[in-house]
Length: 294
Image (tube, rainbow, N blue to C red; front, side):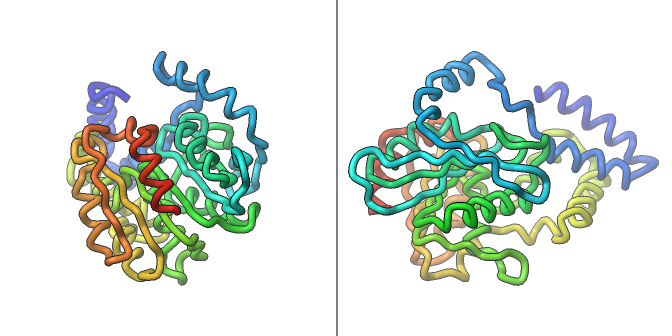
């Protein structure tokens, strides 16, 4: 959505909020959770998609049931001598497994089998909406389908939700903790994401509050509950690698610093100059992950 369209839409929701704040909150939350069509949105994405298809054909795809439909899980065999490890790779918002092939191939070359998971509303999965609980349901479904993972690697939103799946409070989520966790350019708190969305849309404080009330009503938890660094602090035995670029314009580097303060089990490595998207395909990043997984 362009900034101009976002502002126009935000103004319309603000007007609704003057007379019906609850309706405005519902409109804002529905828009917040909506995902775009899975087809490549521009020429660059189309070229990346086409380039990935040779590798994608090497995978076995399963449609795994989740409460809201099915998610596509792509099982890639090891390249070379198998080492007996199985890793889960989770993409970010607006992405899909096809766009993660540089990372997936690098992991396969270590001898690991890799599962690329398309989150709800993305890639080959059903639906046109995504929330944190829906993403965690998808990770849980993949865990059950494949019998667990030695490592989970998530980019952007995918990193945020894998952290919560691995370390969330056990009275809220069925914790699925791998041996190691890798977070690439991951946001750390839902509050930051909601605040950024409200700012982009130009919501009034009245609509912003209504948005958060609607989120709590739908998800069952207040927005500030979803802070992945605090959750990771409760699992000191889980080694975590955080990779982030200080020039990331989509997720502030402050998120990486918060993760690093979760405990000595968290290792932060700066990958400056790679921004938010190029970082996931960087040879330096892939080597850092391979070294960490060991």
